[in-house]
Image 1 (cartoon, rainbow, N blue to C red):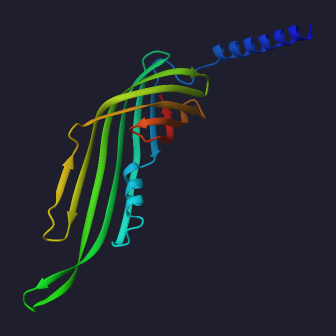
Image 2 (image 1 turned 60 degrees about the vertical axis):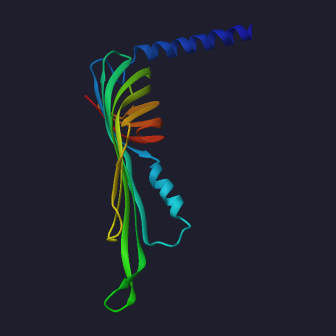
Image 3 (image 1 turned 90 degrees about the vertical axis):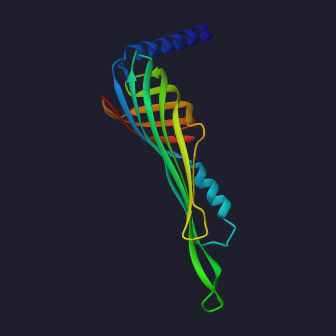
Length: 214
């Protein structure tokens, strides 16, 4: 008897939750435009450069830094569950240092110590078309899966003040980018909220920021 009462109570509770969920307003609806500004982690190239130069000790005034991944996303809700949009992403990394070289001076017949600077830069710009499927949506919380594909070009440049150094610029042979992940938004007000995405590809493994709904 007790078991049947518990089962009835649990069934009623779940049914009540279902009614509340279905009757509540949705955070995003058909016709909405959502704009996300985000900053991600990690910056893969900056992380690799820091690890590579951590124990060398031969460079003077070594600096390793970078920005991003950062970006701007826009999404239009085609239906209550499906959204189409664009993801504009950017990130860069830079390594700079000085080296002292002994250069022969033909005037004096001696070797002079000259300091030359070296810079290695890489940056990536991506524009992806994204397909989002929203599978959980109530009045404040929006949960969706995302897949994107499009243009992504990474460039590399090597420069130096050393007159014998040959500067080099390289770009991606196949400028194609992609992403796949899980996204979340929580709206504090009807139009302003926060966003979070986990995934692979453009935007890094984790990115978060501010959202606006129109």
